[in-house]
Image 1 (cartoon, rainbow, N blue to C red):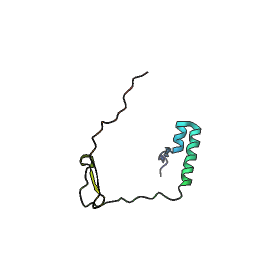
Image 2 (image 1 turned 30 degrees about the vertical axis):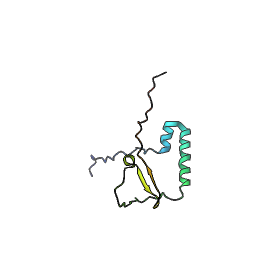
Image 3 (image 1 turned 180 degrees about the horizontal axis):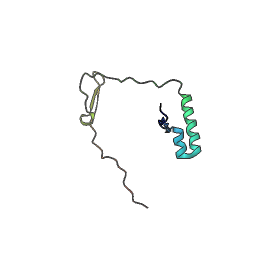
Image 4 (image 1 turned 135 degrees about the vertical axis):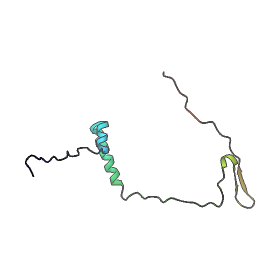
Length: 102
């Protein structure tokens, strides 16, 4: 190697991954960081085993589904008894009225 050549090393990566405790400290101060740390510790302590993943459930139906909103529903209970509920009228959508400033 010649004396003129210098080896330049790349700058180290100084970025910090945000953690929930650090985020709580930035947003809510030291008290928020203490509370976030306590809650994370409590969560870790109460999880005795990993969460169970539920398998997808597929149900086979011999007929097409009926639309009880438009057709109503008719259910046979036994040979002599049945129940029928007619379709209900559609209600207007609920919305909150806008208020002006007081």
